[in-house]
Image 1 (tube, rainbow, N blue to C red):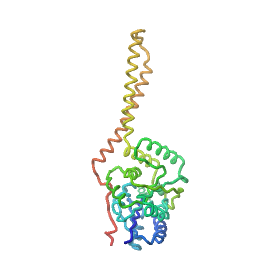
Image 2: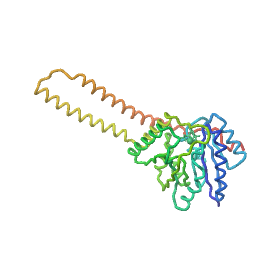
Image 3: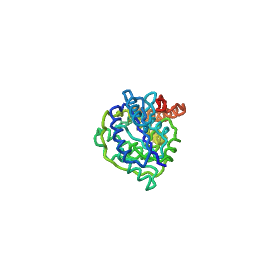
Image 4: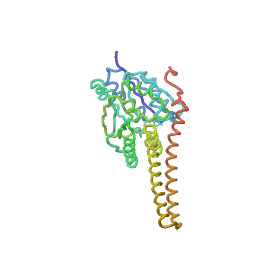
Length: 313
Ligand code: UDP
Ligand code: MG
């Protein structure tokens, strides 16, 4: 029996990149004749002709399957839907813009089949072509989250990876609403081999990630994989109590020894503003965790499917 590889491609407004992607992918499929393939395109509520392009590909090639969402649910939801629909022995996730080179697949397969790895991940060693500010904050973010979280997040790691069915099932068991896959991959464990490659620029179209979207995603990662900010809040609380206690003792002694001239209200005002600022800041952090818990308890579906290839047979 031939082994089957599922290729999951999340697409949001990718009408220009998709034909190029298919062409490139086809070359790799020709090369890997020993395997069966299914290409699962997840249309994440695109506003352009992405779905039409996918349907045309499906008419040409019945290895093409698709899942189309009722609206844009985000890349995390798209990846999950792809994993849900995949049936292959090996599963790989790719971007539609060819920033994840399909030609790395044969090498990735070799590591899994010959060297006994469960997963082969990829990481960019350069961030060429990316705005410098974005790279700077990305680096700081990975430093910070790795300090705080037990789960290791690899700097520059892409979502592009090849996994065994066993690992996919483990991921599918994590049904949280606030998904942060980079953490989930590490969370489920398994033996992972990292391949490095130079950053490739998008073939067509433009990036869907604004700085603000990335910032929110970073917060999502922190809230999803560590509770260290809550511990910091508790620690600061204790520290402030201690300082206050020392100050009380000092003031009482001072008053007993030198009397009590009323003075020092500006410093008092500063202290009050400082402490209430810190309180508000940490209330914001608690709020962040609470909000995530709230969304989690609602148990809303992570994505809603409008159409799949079965309906257009
Ligand atoms: N994507 C998606 N839903 C979204 C945003 C992006 O499915 O809401 C897909 C997009 O079509 C692409 C991949 O996720 O295949 C990566 O997006 P992009 O290339 O814009 O991100 P970048 O590579 O710049 O980080
Ligand atoms: Mg991209």
